[in-house]
Length: 352
Image (cartoon, rainbow, N blue to C red; front, side):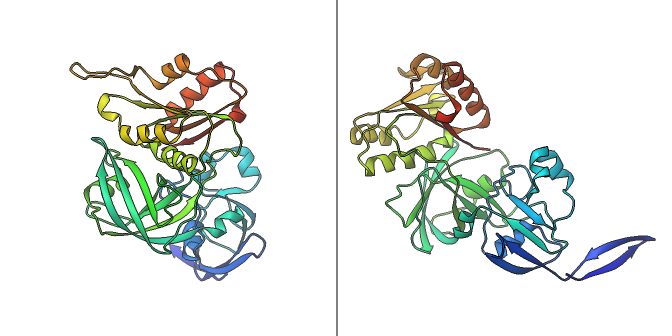
């Protein structure tokens, strides 16, 4: 790598120019990259896609890599976001690591199989006042192989009111058998850069770019009973798992507790009732926390955690799969733990 020196009012600092050599997984991949850019961007330019749900701000901590050599000192963001044990082991955030010297890193070998996909919007469906389903048709490559529970990264271009292109992570909601299609269930986030684009600017027939699939959230291969717990857009990976169960003629006893703040937050009732017909041991239980005057709701009421206390009796043959906000998941895990359910049988996907 080459380096020059520039001066600012008597202050001499190294200004990194030229290129750095990046070695991935002990020479499985090697490439030259422009110095001064984040490692995450350098990897993306080589079609090596590291998950990053926060758009490179160091918040999600998903873009972890292990540095074997080079890398320099961790940034303040990394020191705040990574544990002392991670830092001691050489773990860094690819979005925060600026290339300044030759670098050797290790990543999950499965990430080297991640692909970039071109897609077109086929249909946008309003599900609730703040949730929509986006159905995308893949153009190149035309087929996606994924495990239900995994997610894709959506690349959001610059649009009026935004300043930089970003990427965001969304769980796949579609049937894995329909390999030419990717469905997302997305909830609008107030002033969210990605959801503002999806809700206010994205239209049918628009072109998009994705990468993936990512993640290891998935159903076990065993025969244990299943407890699904979700709220809002947490419906997405559960729906894909239910498709998988239907396709494999699963006989596993399954209960799905789905929570909404109000009646208008409950959606996809017809689809869930169809799954109840297709899966004889499946039961869908929607739960509403606040029933307004005038709403005709005869189902379960209260918080999801309260429903778990009332309805769930954990046993050795039960596995729990949770999807939704960090607060909901943390509270539900605590309830399940108090009921005697071990951590090894609780799996979750926290939506940020």
